[in-house]
Length: 295
Image (cartoon, rainbow, N blue to C red):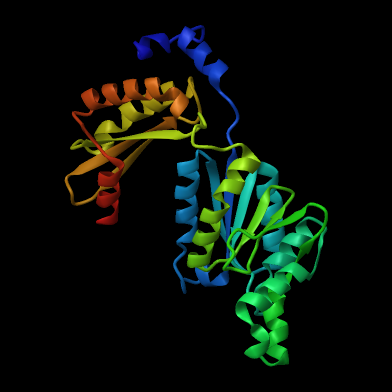
């Protein structure tokens, strides 16, 4: 039925979907750190953020990884903030000479950095640095409380046990530490604020639905069908995306059909058609993840 209806732009199905479509919250993630680029550490924050966005119905459009270079940080955050509604950064806010994220992002927004009294007070109460550091080390420790300042800057203290804030600029850019444990804790605790700022909630019609199909056909055998399927999907919404994932050595491939919940009736029709065309079987997201992790 849907294939027949979608052959004409005057289709009532197309008109219905067009009237239902509302703008998504578009997001980007900027990973900052030479240690990621030179292979010293493995970035897990971008994957966590991708899963975080997917769960909340936020449309993650880009993940960028750059080094500890002021001009590159400034230019990257300028571009990403112009193109997206919600941008987070990870890394570069420690006490050492190469931790320059705060000053670099401040520069991009024509802001200055200064010692933030609230952050410094929290540091004293929680970490008690005066009892542990000499004057030089103490000065470097308080570099982490030297934050961008201005009328469009808001520091979100989302966990009582942590002194580090999520520094928000213009309700668009949010600066987080790169340490995965802190990054994940802060983002999870920030979730209620995010929902309020961007009108995101569990009943948001923009939450995604995703279906997986397992097939013994090769990618070459299914590519023509998937290409035609994706082309049809674009007449409904650019947010409906068809993906294929080879599982080498396992004797099968998987196909992903992803879209917004508002398109779920249409997505189920796509699944039904794909199961027939691909001689496939439906699998859960958990099964797909196990196949991917077994590589």
